[in-house]
Length: 192
Image 1 (cartoon, helix red, strand yellow):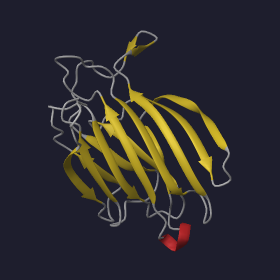
Image 2 (cartoon, one colour):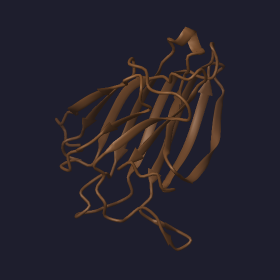
Image 3 (cartoon, rainbow, N blue to C red):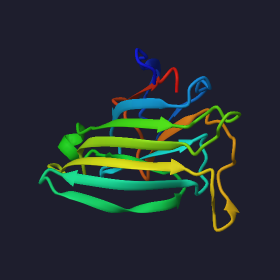
Image 4 (cartoon, rainbow, N blue to C red):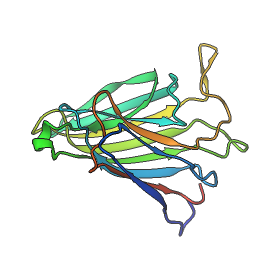
């Protein structure tokens, strides 16, 4: 990002109450790094995870590394997950939390999504989320990083090399939908 550049607003999407997915489509290929911010919960009673996919690809091409902290202040490093069918970017509360008013906030940065003709790379992400976790009083902060692999494992080809990412899907992992209070906004870096 050059000095003087600012994030450019691309658009916002909200939950409908009847769908477990929100998809940003038609990503501009003039940039290959984006920033997503928002808040969400699930209509299911218990907490679950926010998943992310590039180009709605549900093949086992995603990896994730996690560091979490609960309200007690202890840090918990979690084992990485390799070759999952989605990128796990954080946790959101269900309706058991705060009588259904609990929300988690999210900040997600993604890189190397486009410009395949120049350098396809491996799309990567770094996310941070916080808010109510599994119970009524659990406050959890989570940092996760990972990638959508264009490489191979054991000689098997994974994500197709040279494919621009034109959509980012955010979805409820497991049961439940996004309530109408869910909202995510997408920004792009104009020169990277």
